[in-house]
Length: 264
Image (tube, rainbow, N blue to C red):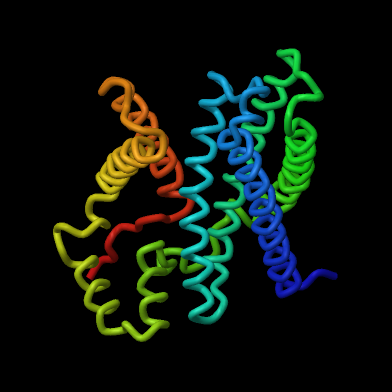
């Protein structure tokens, strides 16, 4: 007979599996994206480095990075205190979303490969096929883990209102390295101030997206040289901003990126 404690332990194990398998799948996908977009000799022989497939990869990478940063902050913050099942569930939700995004990216890449004749002897093609196969395999495993843990992912435990957001986790990290007084003051300001990110949660995404778009334009100019035209720079920056804003808005609630201020 399965007891209540056994059920809790099983759900905790299922959530850990989702987190780890999803992280592995996302990590391999990022390696594939880096190899196929940053190595010129390999990029030239691949069909999914052209639009619309390239656009799918671009937005997938942006979303995975947003999820990855939030999950990493939570993981570090949790290490500064006792295990929190609420945070563990939220990390698993992030990994589950990342898994679905990776699956879309992998399907896009496979469709591009099958719709276009690919030279198997092209430079680096064997490496790409191995990485793509590894991504597909780990993604299938991760999706199976998501299916197994669907109940634990959907049903929030009791006292969910007390769950920290990513800003709370940053405060925990600051406190763990000795900056407790600063962390407490910032936490108090975020709860009370009219300028707090928690009172402007949507605006936070747009500001972050605009900053990411501008940074991408500047970095591209430093790495590749001056832009051919302001229009090209604006389009590139806008796409980056749209990707970041979209990922933030999609993950704001499910990942509890920024919560609302708690009532006094």
